[in-house]
Image (tube, rainbow, N blue to C red; front, side, top):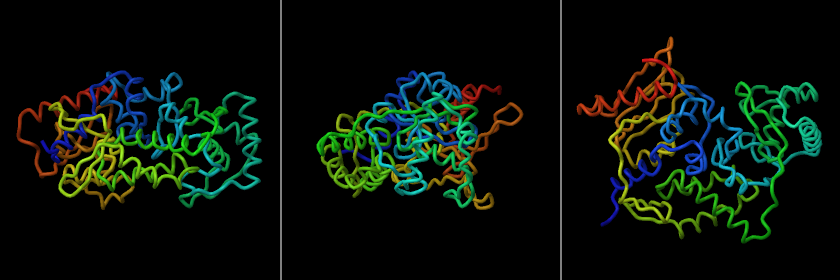
Length: 369
């Protein structure tokens, strides 16, 4: 039987929103979880994991981070990367973090980095404030046009380069320690093998992918491996040859070769997803699968917002039916809803499942009704 768009829709939901498991197993299966600092009502990484980890509570990832086999780092964007995947990306070239552009380090910056690295090694782990108090690097103009602490910029660049790693967070602030990465690939074949493994890891997180979205995904790996950005076009060609694929309504779709879209089954549950959840992360794919244009409006001026500051896409089974804005006020959960068809689904089962999802959100946030 030919694969239909309905099959792909169910497949996208079922493979990503797998049966909840332990935090370690979920992180190992996903390989990457995007991070975001906004809390509405919790950070994106926590909102993503609550659907995939049994009895997950907001903040568990940060609290348990030192005991887990993950690293904070850039992959497609910034987030939490499984350590085997992290190893594939390093050592990186001497460039600044993606937001600052792929600028090579000056001789002065290299000298500063060596001095800071020695300081961190002597102490074993440091708060950025300690480094700043010792070196007093001053202020710099940041990517957004404002001023930032130069030490913070340097530490972030050293972290991106792989000279440092984040050992934990202290009140949300990264605590850094020195990091020794492994050797570079021995030859071109080994390099291609690493890049292909990174592509496959990205596809595992976000499949099934239409052709244009797959190409964008591979291009985004320039953040993971700036040293190999010139190799990514060939990596895309190889990926299209080894991934499973089909054409649906004039669009080519790709997914891991060992998975079967037609076998996907989706429970009849309501789930409120963070805007950064793998199910909805690629907005073009979302529109193709659900015929709905969703926009993240946290940085849109309030008068121009149509959905809300941090609207959570609302999934019912494999149907996208609306969105929710959720907040904690005076120790209670406040929720407001909007619907794609301008009204709530009429089925009684929807109301029951929506209330069950709100109860799960309260448990996740550890608040009362």
